[in-house]
Structures are given as structure tokens and as C-alpha cells.
Image (cartoon, rainbow, N blue to C red; front, side, top):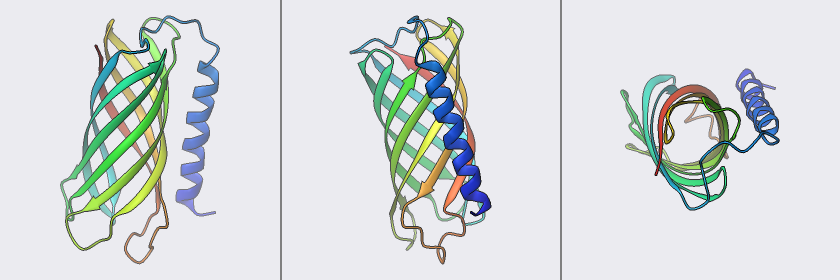
Length: 172
């Protein structure tokens, strides 16, 4: 197993563990069915052995308490080619505690490049911890693990990657 596959598997195990630990928690989270959410995220990652700044926005809807379906857009900037992603996601936010709230998510992504590299699909996990600013606003810190589907190693050197992200998350 390659080093990147090992890192991806560890990130997946971490997110799954956080998700499983959070399930039996007492219901104190206000992400109620029918509420909407929006978030902005900032991250740093690599592709093509080049560093990128990842800026993303997401809009979601809680379809049952604590579970959210969302659609996000990511812009990878700071190098060439520019990268754009459309990211549908399912997220669980644990109702534990009042101040800190673990979260875990599964996502798919469609990636587009500003040059001749072919578009592709990827899938992954996201997990971390929200810190409550107030009842409907959170700052999140977490990790993203992503695997490129049908990866062409002649175009992309690494098909699995893990990177940190920081998020501002709002519910309304």
C-alpha cells in the first residue's frame, strides 16, 4: 500500500471513529430538520506537486436533526492549472456539549481544470470539530481525505491526499 493510501485510510478511520463516538450523544445541537446552513472554508493542499490555496463555499439543508445535505464549490488557487470542484456532501454534526461539536462528512466531487487535464470524479471524508461562537455560528477545524477515482498517474502523481481546513459555519 502506498504512503498516500495509508494516510487516506487513516483519515477515513479517524472520521468514521468520530462519527461512531458522536452517535449516542445527548441531543443539544440545534441543527434541526428544515434549517439551512452556509459555510466558507480555507485550506491548503497539493496537486501536480504544486501548492494550492483552497477556497470553498457550501449551502446545505438539514433533512433530519443533525444530518445535513449540501452542495459546495471549491476554487483551488495559487498555481497552474486552476482547479474547480463541485462537491455534494452528507454531513453529521454531533449534538454533544454546548461549545465543541464533532462533525463527519462523506462527499463526492467533480473536478475541472483550466487546462487540458481531463475532468474526473473523486470521493472522500471530512471530519473535525466545531467551536460554537454563538447558537448559530461555528468555527471548524478539521481534515479532508480525498481519493481520485480512476486516477491517471501520468497526469497526477498522487491519487490520494489529506489536507487541513478551517471553516466558518452558519445555520439559519
